[in-house]
Image 1 (cartoon, rainbow, N blue to C red):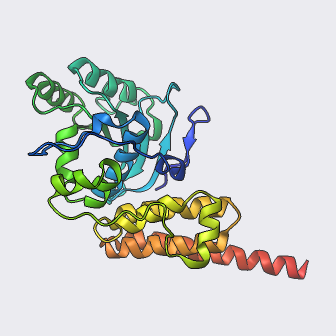
Image 2: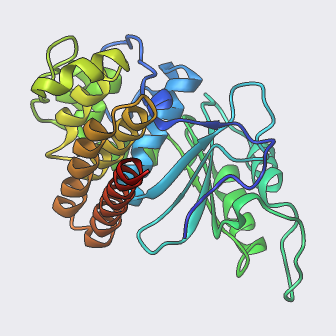
Image 3: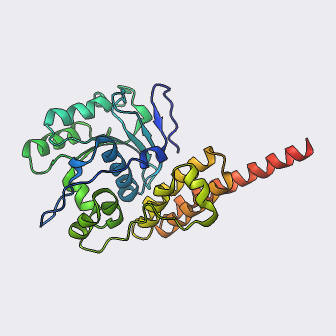
Length: 303
């Protein structure tokens, strides 16, 4: 199952473009650091954080990002499939505070009215089985918000799974992702929040890819490659997503051989992440690209 764009009015963003968004500085942590300061990130960088969270927590594959600020997005920002090949949709809102009405509006914006008794109801983009609202606001400390989420889950039961991911949930899930925390919030936050020494950030240094350095620099992918190396041991699914995004950019930039190297790395990442099905998909894609390349060379020779 794939997630192509069936609607020409949706603006699809390349993953490399989203991953290239760089966070600014945030205030240093104050002990005890229990929640990440996601509200200090720009909306675009917060979307990138949720993208990496999706790879890390959902073990997501076939991920696509849609829309730019100010454009109508029909209640979706990130579309992908989980490990069971179930389609999910994330709406990302970097809000400092959220209300029950805002949560309800976000669900209705995507899902419309609940489908009951086998009715088709409102058409939904990508026909996801799960809708997630991700926000930088606190959710679970407010009884009214918890009650609204419970009511929506009940209302859409047997139709659409509803989740709201607030800063509490994001923080808990990313506590073990020291490389991601360091990349977005700095080394100090990684030490204080994760309780371990973060990997050294190789930003601005050679990525160690030898002959690949030239194409990476030309396509402005050096920081992405460095970040993938930074998270590869602890978060191989995140590294796999980044490596695939790099491969797509290199392929589009006219470097198919270099793209193949990064697709292979993505497959190795997924194998290390105990996702053999995902790894198989990547290596199968590599095999198909190789066959297409060989077939094209044969036609050029015989033609």
